[in-house]
Image (cartoon, rainbow over all chains, first blue to last red; front, side, top):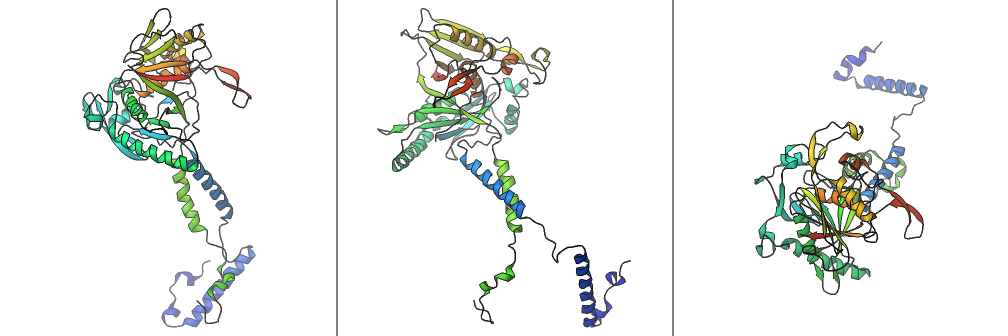
Length: 242
Length: 209
């Protein structure tokens, strides 16, 4: 049965009878200690988290190494869906990644050029992108058979010519990056290989891909090499198609 | 700082007890899900291509070297053979394909129909060309496309011409899609015998029309 003192307010403490209250508390503590000792427990009940810490530390180190060692760190989302392919080449050498999403051309984690998307002469919406991403599973949807255009604005082309294959802001940024990489490689005594990895969204049209490739192909430092090898990042699929 | 008893506070190590691991655990509990969330769970590989030859496939080739090109138009694939005795073109129009549950056999597909490039036909034609003595030693193929053709269609076209599959011909998209690459024994760079996918035209050259 529960001690009535547990529930009732301590009238002794209110009236200033502190010593009897302290005695009662000490007595209670001693009883609790005795009960714990009988059950084989220490004064403080603690979780043994040392082994859990070991596991977590190993997991953390493994995840950090995996995240940093991946040469192609591609995060897929609404504006970036890789195309599926059966290609099985693992990227080994360092390369300059150029990401072509549905909204921007991204170099060195910076959006260099904006991409304009139109469906049936109207601007693409986020809902359109969501529907386009479902075309693999639902190819009979109306949007999947529509012509979706992705293009760079003519102001970003060489001499503002819409038919030009050179994208000026990309060329300028690539020139700086290539110059910097050539200098770094020279300092380290390595040869600059000039490899470009194009991480392109699956809906990006051939014309835009060629504009990016052509622009990159024009970049280089005289006598020291330029960008000459190109490869596409793809999502590996098991069989012949995806 | 010295304590009144003359002992430094650092000397009271016996009073410190075990380090409190709870805050570190809390940080780890946040860090690990964050890293797992950003972890790439899919396999990203690369498809190498050679530099484009601008205007290279425009007119008929005068050289005697055989030149094979696959052009992806809006509604068809066009296989162009140049440089031989006579230029030849094979057109493969888009076909009706049926969405099929992977657990069902191809003959029992009942999904909705949609228009798709004839990848099975393309593979069959290119495989036939590769098996002919004219192209037995050729390992490069030119690939071009109309401006609006999306990268996913090009990637599939490259797949159809790059690797040899178990059979030389496939009748429909479903059977082609499920086909496995033909495995052959070869030697790697170190001279070890390895099993790899047989290749038809591994060198892909992009061309602009």
